[in-house]
Image 1 (cartoon, rainbow, N blue to C red):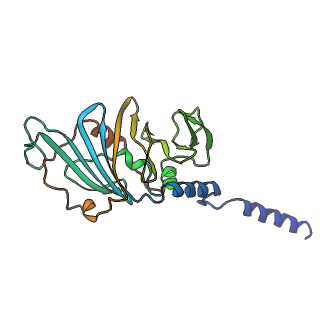
Image 2 (cartoon, helix red, strand yellow; image 1 turned 180 degrees about the vertical axis):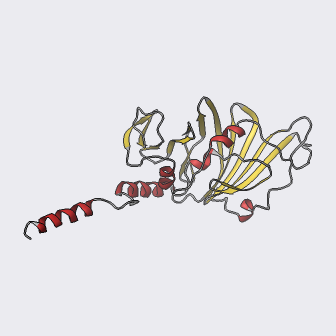
Length: 262
């Protein structure tokens, strides 16, 4: 009996030391707290994206607590034809959608709608989102991402293909997210940071999917002033001419994902 008691104590100690399945580690909690300190007050925003290799194409994006609205504006086809039967008298065509996280709630197009890479920049509950993308939060290292000191999550510095997130080590601004889409790796880099209303915001987004790539310039319009209910209403798509946007709409539609935590 005297030998049994120490053995039982050892088993109890081991059981105490092993975290339960699905438990959140102290490192994850500290990371989540650090992100909330920097971005917890960012509840909504409005921005416009333009693309260096697609003149005349712009995307107006609103987001509020996971809800979003996108309005694409681009040169109309010479015929002026559109999906809703309107004619683009102004020379511009239009496409609009509203949604929640990675789900399109309503769209003026018949097919799938592209998601904005800005939706992957600082999603709600970022640590859970990154884990859902396959990022191993426990795998972390410190180094330099370009000239910026960074915390690299999910992959070692020499690993160029594993799911990963890079954060600026001082202000926790996301510098890169990388995740797998089928057999392809999707890499989205956030650069050109500026400070607006006390938040660090990217002025440039670089998207790479296999051999395809595009670069977007971001113009921030408003912070914490994009929470109007009408913006995100499924019955508020407007009546402007609607057509499938030109590239990089197809690249973003086929590769940008916003998965939910399991």
